[in-house]
Image (cartoon, rainbow, N blue to C red):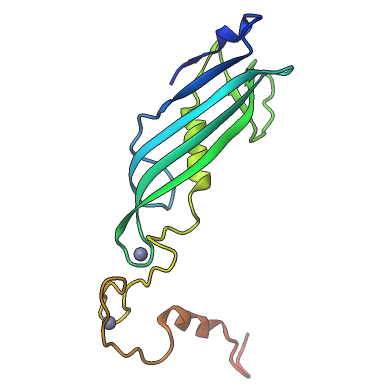
Length: 173
Ligand SMILES: [Zn+2]
Ligand SMILES: [Zn+2]
C-alpha cells in the first residue's frame, strides 16, 4: 500500500479516498493460532486538518483459527476502524500516542496500522461458536457432533488445580 499524500497540498482537494484489500494471509498475533487470513478489506478517507491529517478507515476481515475448546478450525469474521491523526515525522522526540500515525516523505503505508487494529479487535478467546461444548475430557469426542456415555467422576479437571490454592489447616503458609 502506498498512499500519495501530495494531492492534499492542492487547495481544492479536501480528502483522499482509499480502498482495497491487504495482500496478507498470515496474521502475526502472538499466542494466537490464526491459520489463514482470508481477506482484510479497508475503505476510508484521509482528510486535511489544521494539524496534520485525519485518517478514518473501515476494516472488514475474515480468518481461520483453531477453537480453544473443541480444537477444530473455524472461520471467524470481524470488523473494526482505524482512526487517528497522520503526522509527518520530523525526527523530533516522538509523542507516544496510539492515535498518531507517523509518516515520512509524501507517502504513507497503513498496512501495519490496519493489521494492528485487526489484532486488537479479535475476540479474547477463539471459539467456533459461543456455546461450543468442547471435547469430552475422558474419551476426547467432539461433543458438538456426538454424545458419549462417559461418566465424569470427581471434580471437574479444570477445577482440580484450584485445590492447591486452598490453604491447609494448621499447615505452614
Ligand atoms: Zn469449538
Ligand atoms: Zn466421553
